[in-house]
Image 1: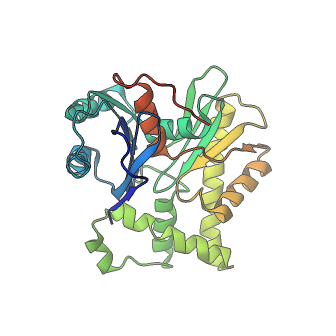
Image 2: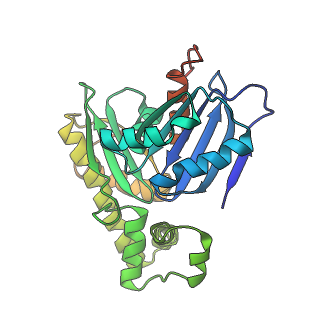
Image 3: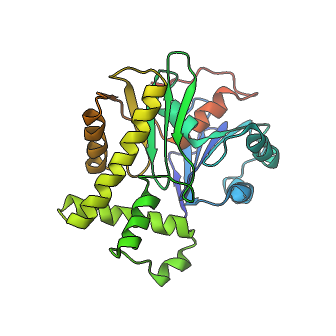
Length: 288
């Protein structure tokens, strides 16, 4: 499924674009020189090597030429070598290209530069905490093969293993990867748990425990005390019922977090980061 939204009449030139490549979806935001969203786009997430081809198509559709700044926030991009490699591959798409991890962009979108924690639980799972010294402490984010406990993929796999769900053969024609199709099962398991289905509730409770453990470990390592600021991102943590269970588990561990709803999406946060670093746009972005 590809989704393009035009936010308003095209009153100004696209000044910067932000890309959020997650495990299931590729989300893109285009903003004008004042940081206002002009276009939004969503499509099934390609592998890292396929980002360039996806942007090529979108640039033609949006008639983008000589873009001042592009920021790409991607899952699975951690090392300087990985970032440099992707930046070089995308160098034809903008005058300035920034590459960062999706969790770092999500943190910026939720908490700016303040100390705290962000817990992401979508297709994958990861927690990032920043202490007073600004140093980031990461827990999780190892990918579906090596972990991502508590994630939508983890829930979907547990449902398959227990026989609660099966992958339909028709899903193979959706264009989504197997990881994304397994992760898509999580929503129905959470709904069933909320309605009192015992086996589903066991899986969901275990996922909530895993995610709380990630956040707790990151907060302790960053010396954030017992009442840190905490935000969240990802389809699981955006579910009120599911998030409440994670927060309850954190309280049971003695972490009385101060909840802070995300201020902007990861794609928009990436776009504003691109705008701030743009070589052609000298403005002050309003982060309110």
